[in-house]
Length: 178
Length: 174
Image 1 (cartoon, chains in turn yellow, purple):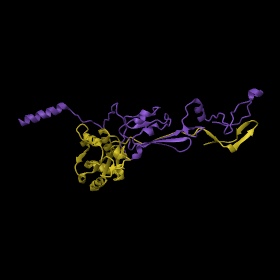
Image 2: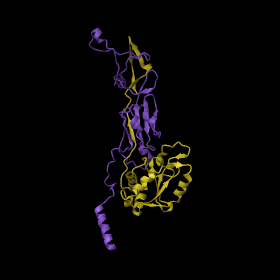
Image 3: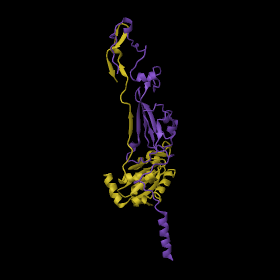
């Protein structure tokens, strides 16, 4: 459903609204860098607009903070219905380094639902364009959860009840793998 | 006059060429100094938890689920790619990759989880990673003399009695 939505929106081009809810301006500079002619996000029809009422996509930077939570929520509610939210930077994705500070609520998804996450502190302009490309279906996402397991516990486990003596030696009658 | 200036401008544009990076079609690798997301190598990790102690964002969690298994979990949500975990790692099990294309629609995709097998200290009962050859053998099932659990070393007596067949010990170890 989201993919169909994205493809439909790509036909019309994305208009992005740039919301900073208390970040350090690093991600803002990278987003504006992605709109310069060198990276040229307008190839994908991305246009920066000044009002959330004109926007399809909200680019969130900065963590959810107590002082700006209401404003971000209102800006999200003001956007027209098929809407996406991009969390850009590690503050918006997970709360940032000061996630346990008194003024920080946490990641931006505690206030508004997030569709795509672009981690990085700050993410490169290429990473932002890549995130947009993933949302539009141009590129495939490359990350997946990694799990490392050592195959099986190699120590056989002996039960003391199963011991039987034979002369001076103790013999384990039954061994069992853990 | 104005037409001439327009033509001059067009000529200048032709001379300058194309400056836009053809990014998603033709990706270029990041520069050498770039720190992307950290990659955890489970075969090298000794479970010392130095990375978890040094992470400024508290993104690396270490906990013991049982006596023998220690779990290292890297969540990656608020990681700032500062590289301090890779700096303190004594075994160089963490490397900062140059991978920056980690945009995703599920935040759980960034997680990495290692299940490390740890030996148990006979005296204090805490986990440690075996380092010596004896400890490596212990992991494979070799048991040395353990008086507390009434285990003896299994020695063949065939060379004393002259018997070629060893039938006094019937244990299975694999």
